[in-house]
Image (cartoon, rainbow, N blue to C red; front, side, top):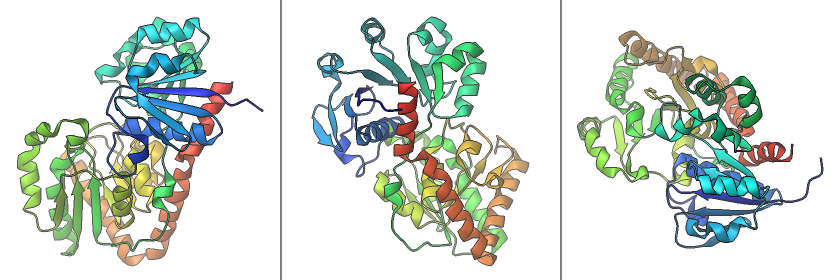
Length: 367
């Protein structure tokens, strides 16, 4: 199908960001996804404008970025509007009345307040599509908000989260004794001290190191790190843990993952996607986690996903330790198969490259 270029307007009222610095400082998952989707759309010969809380404008990869307060200035020029995690009834009605397509991009789970507007079928119908990041998210929305099947088919589409694979080009020496965890504290950080201690005890490998990157500061909630002070202190006193509560930029995270053997994620919260899993695989770092949220959709080797959703159970915790040990044994004894698994994981996540996600989105727009 041959289609003419379109003008896209991406709107975000969350974390402030500049599009020309996204590689060099940490961004939230939803902001990163919106930015990468806009980048892909622009590189596929469309024009794209991102408006967010930033008070400066900048240009990068054929994108213009400016202040969210200038929405009205750009709205008349746009063919298609994408809202990232906010509802504005006046904006929706304007688009409906002026034949502009309007999309809502959701990265949040059913239990988060920001999604609870989905109980209103009439509001759902005002959007051309609700864009989701996983089939797990779609199924849980359908279940918990009791959304009719016909409305699901007509108004919802799964496009996943975009990934910038260019960050993972090149060769960096991998440390086979290096394990890594990079996520916010409430996603399992309380288990990490016990995990590394048990791994060293059972493998008798004193060289194992667990690199931990975790903080709430990304979401302007650095004060909430105080809730985890006891855990941070415990981790910092473990000689086999390298703790960093300063967040990594996408470039820095890519290097840390590329130099790591296994990504350890004792998941305690359901991810609607799990971007760090795709980043780990792109880096050739093998993720190990539990069957909770969308993990089975985004991890190539399902054998690396423990078939339980709750690690608080003692048996599940012990099984997770065994899962990691089995992978460490494979690291030691069967480098050839492990190398092949890394390559297959890298190939698997190519489907999430931002250009592919943008193409999928444009197919939705044009149909």
